Length: 449
Ligand SMILES: Cc1cc2nc3c(=O)[nH]c(=O)nc-3n(C[C@H](O)[C@H](O)[C@H](O)COP(=O)(O)O)c2cc1C
Figure 1 (tube, rainbow, N blue to C red):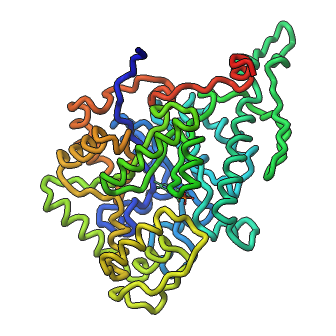
Figure 2 (figure 1 turned 180 degrees about the vertical axis):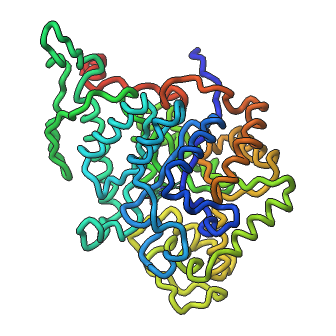
Figure 3 (figure 1 turned 135 degrees about the horizontal axis):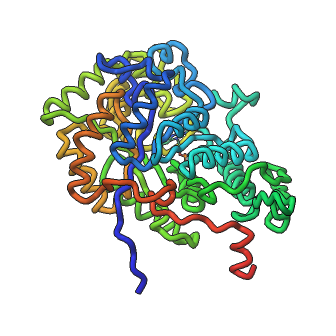
C-alpha cells in the first residue's frame, strides 16, 4: 500500500492595503495610506511569514478593484492598488520563505507576457511564485483595453484554457538542465534541450521559445478561484490551489468533494489540488467584543457603497434611486461571474432582504468574529471535515487584525499540530506539498508518447 503523507493545513493571506471589508479603511486603526506604501506591505509580509503562512496573494483587475460608479468608488479604498507582479518582486527581497501569488487575467493579457513575468518572479524569489489565473469579472476592464464589451463567460474560459497551455509550453521551452553556460565549450545552452512551442490555436499564435530558462518550480503554482460549472472544470484541469467563496460548512464540503472528484476524473491526484475557502477573522478577547467590532465596521458602510456592493455582485443592475432599506427590484440576466450572483439572489429572495441587509451580508462575507480559540476551532473543524485543505485568510482592515491572527491564532494552530512551526521547503511547491512538474519533453519521453 502506498503511504500518504499526513494531511497538513496550508494558509494563504489575501493582501489588500485597505482591508477586505469595504468600509475597513475607515476604521480608526486602519492604515489606508498603506495601500501605496511599500514599507507597510513589507512589514505585513514579514508578519505573515512570522505566522508561517504558505503564501500571500494579491488580487487584481485591470481597472479600479470596485468598478465604474465614481460616486461610490470615491467612498471606498478600492480606487488604487499596486500592480501585483511589481509589488511581489519587491516583496521577494524582504522575505525569505513566503509564497508570492499574483493575479493576472487571461482575458486581457497575452500568454507570452505572463509566462515571462511569472517565470521572472519565480527566478527572482527562488521558487516562490504563483499565478492566480482569472478570466476577469469587471466589464470595465474591457473598456480599458480597447474592447466594446466583456468577452462572454464560456469564451473567456476557452481562451483561458488555451492561455494556460501556452504558458506551460513556454515555461517548458528549455529542459531543466538545458542552460549549461559552458564557457569552455562556448555553449550557453544545449540545443537538444530546447523545445520551441510553435503554438497555433483558436486564440493565440506563439512561436516561442521563452526568453528565460525553466522556472525553479518547473511551473510556478497555479491558483484559481472559479465557481461556475465551466470554471470548476477549468480549475479541476489546471488549478493547484483553489480559492472558494463558500461560507457554510455543508456547501464547502460539497464543493471540496466535487472539485477533488473532478480533478481525479482528469487523472490528477486529488491531494495535489488544495481547496482554500475564504476566511476573514476578527479576533477579540470575547465573542461579544468581536461581534461588536464587526457591527461597527458594517455601520461604516455608506448608503452609496451598500447599493454598489449589491450591484457589483449581482451584475448589470442599477439601484440608483432605490431606497437602501427597501427590497431588491427585478434582476435582468447578465454576462458576469455567476458564482457570487446566484447564491445572493436566492438569499435575498428567500429571506426577503433589503438592499442594505444584502449589502451587509456581502460585506461580512467570510467574516468570523470571535475569540482566538473560536477562530482556531473554526479552522480545525473545517479542515477535519474535509471542507478545506487550508484557508485564504483576508483581514477586515489592516494591519491590526493580521497581527492579531499571527500572534493569537497561529500559536493555537501550531499547538494543535495543525500548522508548521518552521518552513520545511525552499520553494512554495515544497511547502504546499505539491510535486514539481516534470518538463513536458521529458514527460513525453518517459511515457513513451
Ligand atoms: C478569494 C477570491 C479571489 C478572487 N480574486 C480575483 C481577482 O483578483 N481578480 C479577478 O478578476 N477575479 C477574482 N476572483 C473571481 C474569480 O476569478 C472568478 O471569476 C469568480 O469566482 C467567478 O467564477 P466564475 O468565473 O466561474 O463564474 C476571485 C474570487 C475569489 C473567491
